[in-house]
Every structure is written in structure tokens, then in C-alpha cells.
Length: 201
Image 1 (cartoon, rainbow, N blue to C red):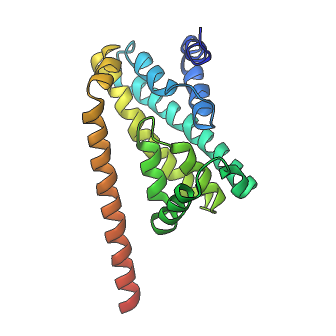
Image 2: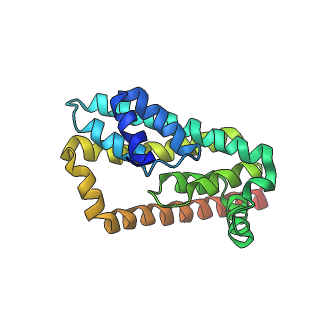
Image 3: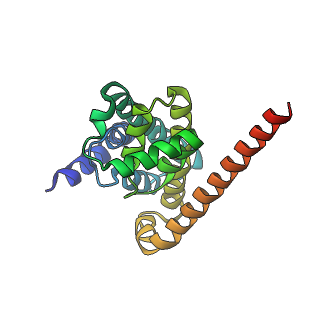
């Protein structure tokens, strides 16, 4: 049995606690093969109440936020050393986006499904000095949306929700891309409005 499969099975047997710990580990940089998403769908498929699913989604979002904060502080303490295995142009591009759009960039990065390079964005947020509270809030809301979709699929379609994700990955990716573009446009318009207000004030 592969290491990732072993982690997923162990977390599944541990119930909500396993979901929380797996979410922490996954977001802290330990590879789990999208374990929290898979586990959330599986656990949501065997409960009957939307409230229970909402609790599971919240548990996963809190755990993931905690893991991202751990990785964020690694970047904050280590500085550029934490980014040494990534190409400079890629890191510089993320630095510019963080400077212009701040928490919106993290919100989009954590909302996007695997294999989006979320961990690089989290490290960059720490390295380039994003404040921890905006970082934590944007991470929590983004994960809440992503895991909320997983919880709904599990509750609505059972274990077939996983198959639906694989079958309609292109469509789901398109929806996320649309949300990302809409968020970027909103952030740009908001920034321009603030600039105009400052210049006329």
C-alpha cells in the first residue's frame, strides 16, 4: 500500500478528527494526493443531515487554514531560502500579484482544486510579508467554498460524487477559472475606486 493511500485510510477510520488532521497535514506541505477533498466526499456521503455536512466542511476548512498558517510561518521565518527550489520568474510573478491584489490572490489559490500550486502561494505570502490576519481569513473563506462543494457532492450523490469530479473536471475547472477571473476583476475595480476616492478626497 502506498504512503498516500495509507494516510487516507487512517484518516477515514478516525472520523472527523482524521479529517481535521489530514487537512492540517495536506495544507502544511505533506503530500496526501488531495486527501481532504476525497475524505470529505466519502464522509459526507454517509450522513443524512446538511448540518452534519456543514460541520464536516467547517472542520476541514479550519484544519486546512491551520496547516496553511504553519506553512506561511515557515516562509515568514525562512525568507527567500524557503523558495530556493522554485524558479525566480515564477516567484517574482507571484510577488507582484500579492503586492497588487493581496488577500484576493490567496483566496483564489486556496479555492482552486489540485494540482494548482497552492503551497507556493502560501510560502510566498509568508516570505513577502502579507499580514497573518488577512492571510488567515482569505484562506479560510477560500477553503470553505472549495470544501463546501465537496460536501455537497458527497451528500447529494454519495461516493459517486468522486466519479463526477473526475468526469467533469474540465467543467469544474472552468467554473473555478470564471470565479477567479471575476474576483480579479472585482479587486481591480475596487482598487481603482479607492485610488479615485483618494485623489478626489
